[in-house]
Image 1 (tube, rainbow, N blue to C red):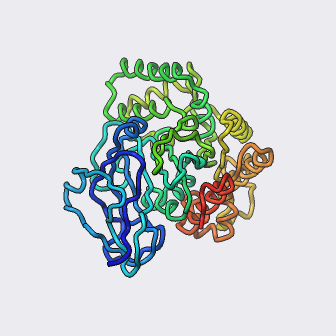
Image 2: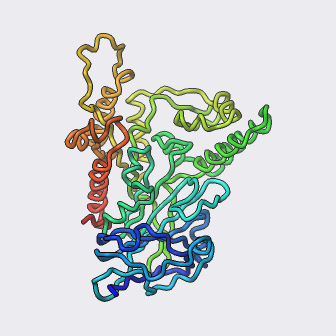
Image 3: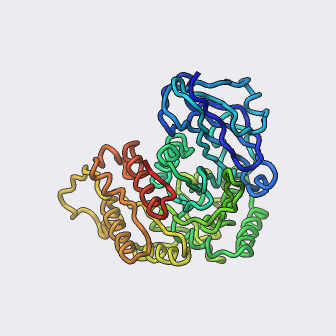
Length: 432
């Protein structure tokens, strides 16, 4: 038969869908490896506390290593997706062949706040388009230091993992944890944008919304569906500061209100040398070119008419980081620096390049940015996740070829660095 692996207690009332397998029947699994997931329907106080988050899922990991065998493969089809049964703690759902006894599965809870109307996407992890997703797990998750991830893919990719559901992070840690990812689309989370959001009052957020609605009311032609989706996502991001949000969690002891972020993982690659400043209201925007192309003509016309470009020097960027760190007292900024040399540069003379070189040559800009971050770190304003040094040690040309997208091996090193930082903050994360 084998060791029985059972559903753990959640601490709140919930229903669950049928299990969707992450590992096939008969697979060899390692201790801590995720093996299946299901959708959750929360009841009572938990449902109220998770208001605004229209997706909740549980990922289950085996506490033991060995050959996996599922007791019940489920009914299959839409019954497994749409028909929910009560979550029964202690119910056996799978076994480890050749082992003895009984052990509860580890559970990681995923919650997501989708943009716009929920769209069914089948039995997938975190289906749909989100403004925020998060994961928490382990007894004492309410006391774990919350990590908010607010950056581009060089800061988010190695934390979300290959299937974008925190699976690798879950498998690599033993203790409780709570991680929040704030999406960078359409509003990229650079320091001035986050600072404006942190200081923005609700009445100011409403004024921003009214300004956009007023422009759309007079727009000719009328705003397209692409305009409306883009505007809705943008206003959702402008209306709430991720550095102030407290997200509820639960464990076997029940529901807890959660904490504000203790750490914010950011990306220096998200800091532009030019952004947009609203001519009347003064707030700032940074939208990546690829995302701007997804907006409709009305949004692009509004951005052109209502905003003026604002240039930023490296000193401006340093000042924005320092002001954000001061305003976000209690939240420690951790900034992923830039790869300053891939090892492929073959410039023999800089004479053909106009100064300042940092405006022309990416690797020079990377070195200047890294020096600026080192100065801020020495002053205690922030911490630096040194992707430059790690990539150089294992081979930048192979593991960070384009300067931002990391190999799986480099992601593993960076994930380990973040785990060590969080472990030092109270041993809440416990890397093996």
